Length: 582
Image 1 (cartoon, one colour):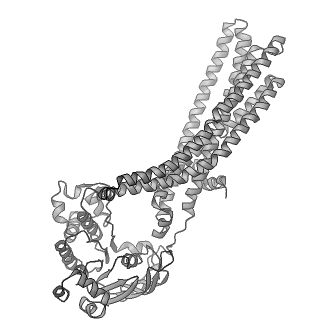
Image 2 (cartoon, rainbow, N blue to C red):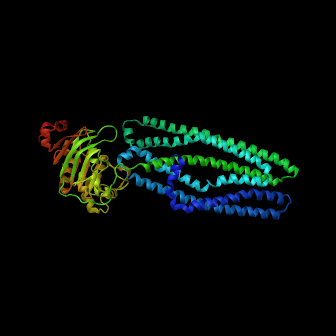
Image 3 (cartoon, rainbow, N blue to C red):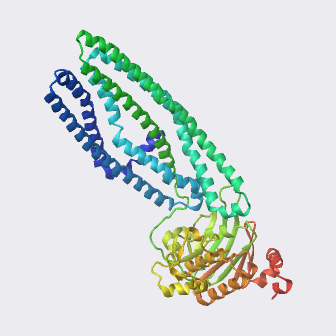
């Protein structure tokens, strides 16, 4: 599929702007007609008014020129407004649609497209498409019409002199074609290299503390410079090629003007042509030159737009790998286990399986711990419950029904998840807590903060729950962010609470207080606690032990000490002998 087809596919976002798409070009066409009439009026003023020293005639024709200019300005403003409404509206609709589509994609789909690339597509690429829509309305019809109109008007003045126009115009077009053919590949290359720059910029800004902690500022700058140099090299190369456009076209046009003046002088001397007509011919040649330059710029703009359209359509063409099969609520079996895994296998697509033959059940109101070494598959396992990913083989059940049978809303509605990375959003503490319960009042917040062990430090803040949180919660410590994320998850009293190593930044005393609060306040909640700390999971009703993607142990702390060597090894690495058996 070529670039124009990719751009044409996005026409659905312009259906609400049909009126602007008709009125805008029509107004610009009328303005171009007025512009083509100006040289004829100028010739008439010179040949009849100035030549005969008729001031009244000059003023009369001058007034006509002013009127045509004012009308042209009016039509141009209408066109400009139409172009603005259509292009900005188009860009807004595309962004909204893209964000909605991205929100339907699974974690694996977003991993493939990459976050920096998606950001570039939603900003730079859509801006390029907006510009193309604006130029489509303003110049796509006007510029070719001016070239054709100037050729016709020159032939109307004098057919012999018009031969110069019909020779020069193809020469200018040939120069434009050669330069565009050479530069178009570089414009496409620039779009893709912007992704690389965006990726490094995002990594540098989001990981600035890590960069500074390891004193890697210079290395990071060097890495950015390398990608930026690649982008700059492409931009400079295309700039050098494009820089030839002006001089070459102007040389050809000036030669044409010299020829018009030369042969025009001969015709004026013989009485076949008048001075004003020569001036008009020179003006028409200038109009052709300027219109050709505009056409060349349009080629550049639409070339970039074609590349951007392909990148935007790639996002829309990415089908969600995790599909919602229904939007209706379904009946569940309240007597069945809350969660059940049956022979589950899962792989990210890299060739191997991250989880292999996992089977277990979790009963209602149980507290379940999941422990294992780094890379053992703990986070992968819990991501299968809310269907962030779909299993490769086997089945995951929630209250007796396969998780694929649920709508996303019903599946996740009563599920509180605290991810490994504590993510808070820009706004107040109260705003963040209301993500978990939309209409939470002060009592709901107080309860959630007490459960998460956040109440004490929030009360010490100047504005308490109205304290402003910067993007990502950068004005809070790691432990404070984790506790507020837990508060956000528990405020809605979810049926299932999943804590994915969410106490890693807490001290042991706070961790213990958190577990005690969960046990006291969340009696009707099934709690799944993922941790690498034995102390966090040892008192759970059931402990799942993962090792290299396999479930190697399932039972209580005491049972696993006897039956699971992996669990015992983890315990001995963290606790003293007497603590292990306590």
